[in-house]
Amino acid sequence: MTNHQQSTRGEPRVALVTCGELADLDPDDRLVLAPLAAAGVAAEAVVWDDPDADWASYDLVVLRSPWDYALRRDEFLAWAASVPALVNPAEVVRWNTDKRYLAELSAAGVPTVPTSWVEPEESWAPPADAGEYVIKPAVSAGSQDTGRYDLADPEHRELAAAHVRRLSDARRLTMVQPYLTAVDTEGETALLFLAGPDGLAFSHAIRKGPMLTGPDLGLDGLYKAEEITARTARPEQLAVAEQTLATVPGGTRQLLYARVDLIPGPDGAPVLVELELTEPSLFLGHADGAPDRLAEAIITHLARRD
Image (cartoon, rainbow, N blue to C red; front, side, top):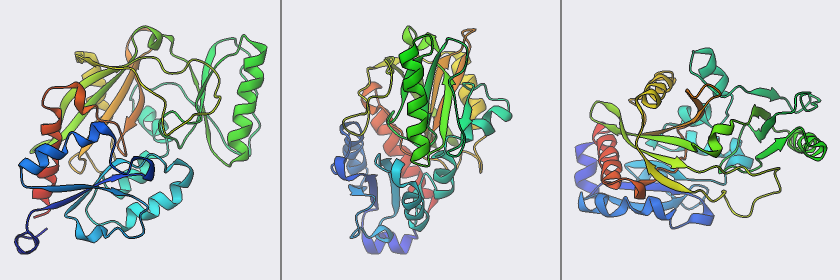
């Protein structure tokens, strides 16, 4: 955005990208509208696959809740590549929407949940050991198509195999991970980072309660309901988050936001579950000043485009 463009077009315009089922944005995302308006930024919700949307008319296009993309990833990536001024950038979106990035992070030394991968053409049988496992697709959002299986239970073993076959029949790469039982008591910790003048800065943290109670039985709506409370991040969690962010291809200065999701591993040390750079809930309503910090992050990226 040049100074000439800004003066000609008036206040900067920002699109907050969503999906048809949340055409007016998720309620949490709406919290950023008032601080943006107070700063003289005109922000509005726009559905990502709206054929009438004029993406070039916006000074910044911010991915927020396009949560219906998982079964249309190729279409979504083509759309992202066509949008000027997209944050996070299309190259990051391509990398981050396929959870095989976890293998890259693990190879780089980031502590991650151990994961095995089942290609669509591969046969798969449940492991012989009687532990609990999580099965999910490598491209997903909102815990869609995700289940928890106790392999000591013969019925669960059959359901786990059926889950993998169902994903394979749909030509989807499958992830198989041990269930980390500490989540049942400790929960999952999400650490939120937002852009500042010097790059990403830690904003706040929340606790998610355990979500997976059993086999995948389908899901009504875009995502599973979450039990969210505020949380104070511990130094060891922040250290893993910083280690994770240091591996992002292209660096973190290009990012508007990042969310690092951690669960205690068997030894109690935090391990990475997911690095969310595409459409994470930011839980703005669970930390004082978080909506203002997101507005400031957006303004920072607007300034970088001058």
